[in-house]
Image (cartoon, rainbow, N blue to C red; front, side, top):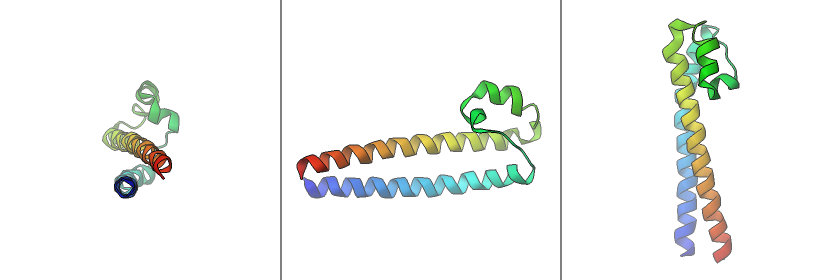
Length: 99
């Protein structure tokens, strides 16, 4: 049982690392386009769709696809990291209990 739980925790850690690297590459690709074109917005715009549509998208309509892609990848990356972190913590707690 202990070996199984330990291998699950290690597998989840590797999955979190892979997800992080994968989305970091995707985010930096789009981020590079936004930086080269001086598209600026804050974290509030990433998490608040109405604020993004009211303030940022009208200012940069030609980069709408890049902005939305960047925000989608950021949100998904945060969501996946949160889920994987919770799973690692839960399995780690179970490991501590069974040890």
